[in-house]
View 1 (cartoon, rainbow, N blue to C red):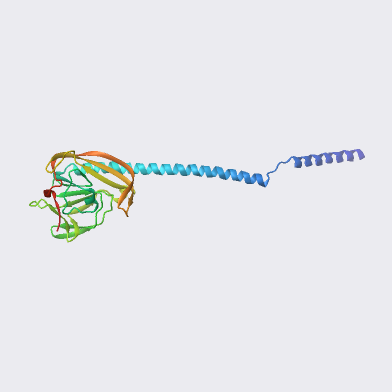
View 2: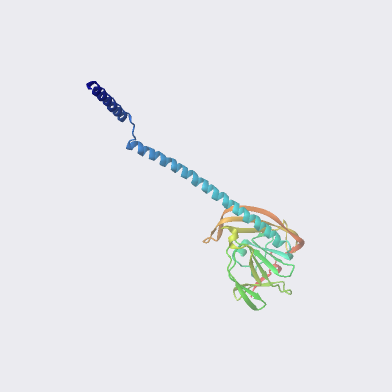
Length: 265
């Protein structure tokens, strides 16, 4: 009986000793180790966030460039459609004239300009620009039939006018207000996706008043910004140049006195 008790006591000692050894050998995590681990994790997360941010910026930049290229291609296509049936004459207005909307009483240019004017097959005068347009009264004869809203700079715009067959001229302003037979935005504002269009037209070399030409060159540039203070477009996104061909040769109206087609009344 005593022997059995001794054996049991010995086993209990062995079990206690084994338990103590387990406690001694158990490895825990200190506060310092925890903080270091969290710090390393935060660094890795910051690196991942930076990489994602850079990738996001690159994606947005590529997307904006693609949008601008789409605007450019569609604008070029539309310009070909608008000008191919030009008849009678063609006239280019210098950049300053186009920017300040001073078409009335202005001559044209024999080189290049930012607005183009020509006759349609129906006998109307068509003025195409992307330099903006103030509020315009719509006239049919002496009757005012409506008002066209202001159009911002950087949007392609067409305006139509009755032409006096005797003088070869049309009324651009009446009593100080712009007037037209019709005004039409070529595209809606949403089409530009925050971009702005500028078009520069150029005659072939050595053109003078009365020359017959079969085409002009159009350089279209798409910008992402418009500075209202300086009235200038900034940050080129896309640009291209293309020849716009006419169905039939037409006459150039350049900088001669006889080239004044728009008048103020």
